[in-house]
Image 1 (spheres, helix red, strand yellow):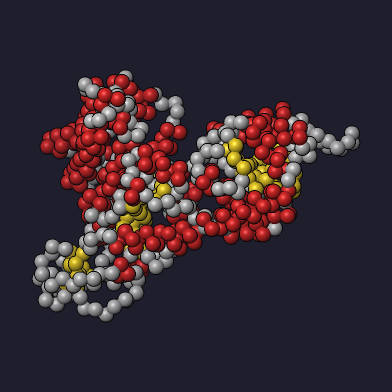
Image 2: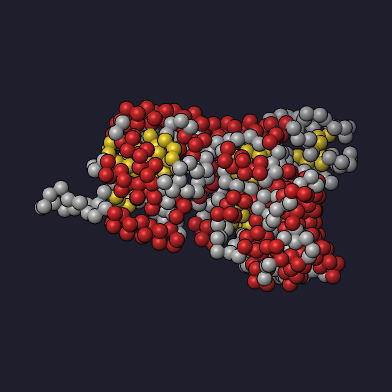
Length: 622
């Protein structure tokens, strides 16, 4: 079958664990064909380039969410009226008190209104959906939306909604700078509405849209379902609404409330329209249910990780230093290394020979400042020690990074210690813990996110921000090597059973077939007399190679019977033969000075004719 893979800030770009997961999925499902539709978050991400793509990726189309180029589209009076109406409705759903029924929206519903709340919440959800699809239809009819979304009309509509009767207190308190910030962020989040991905040669040609995350990444899937009736599958290993709560703490309460209302409404609409939702763990599943996801649509699929690099360490646990604790990860405040250092101070009182290796580096300036603070704290808590008066002292805590001669890889970092520690106060799915489990290491972790679900009963769990409890658990395992060995063996067995690439790929292969089997056919194959042929358009029809010598001809459902001449292969649009605006799906053209105005969002299309030419799909003429 042909899958439209929707990503944001990940695959096919060289960045993030989500990109690795998508790459493993695509490579593992070589029997299917993939079209990748990627949204980029930064110029740096685009500059880093793509990962090598397997042959089953026949097309990649990208759109930017980070730049602020003017699309050049100027609406007439009627189009401006349509925009003001739909955007005003959208803003009203974000500012009303009833929006408190949607997770993340501002406000709460009083107990007296609790009986009427469900019906009213459903009406507000429909109101949001109608406004969203109305804006998409406007962009399809009149051109891009970015200029309109940044216009004074949009800001005034948002202000009227916040000042209207029934608006929540936080919305009423929004000042003009707050409204300008919200309007700018909504413009970026709604950019997929302006893309030209929703035609018959784009997402309309795929059998299934698979969104690799919620939020903006799922928006093209919603529009493909709205315009072309393509089923939508949504996979979330981290819920976008939860990420909004954890980021941008410096914004005003009004900004955070309005944006949380938008993300909550968008999540609810995505879950309502999706054919199936696959959370990566029970923690994400609970968030999705809170956001309105139907339990009947939820199917947990644990993330797939490559166990091969950790096999050697897992098969030789006796090589670890029995007195060394290891922490591996990205250095940032959420990892709470300060509590870990204070816990290690307690551990040293009980086990003077213990050592702690902190392996990892910062990802941003905030992380770099936090790392410097932790190094200063370690120097203060643990003065350099020496074995004798003529020996050089050393600190029992070391800060290291992988890639050097001593620790070439993360597997070497885990293998260097007998006990792996996680001290986070915020965590989604703990990929680092799973890597430690692959290595057969016992673990001590804080009870956050999906930690308990990941380790099961194969490790010790303590409350977060509790150095004393963390220290006691570590000391108990340091003093009991047999218990460490039992827990490590059980952890490795659990990880190999639940968290490998093979189980993840097999699960999604079955899900793809399940969704397609319950989806009505959107194309009808006609025989020589023009009558429809049942069961003659299998999903394998999109796989390269000839599966059948049947002379049946395909036509779009509802097409005329006379459209049965010589079949035409489904191909992508040739940018050289059309006047495509610079930066659109046809690719950038620096000489296109005589073309129309610039596109709403700069796009790039990379098509592989050799891969497309082998697709034996035939279509009639509309």
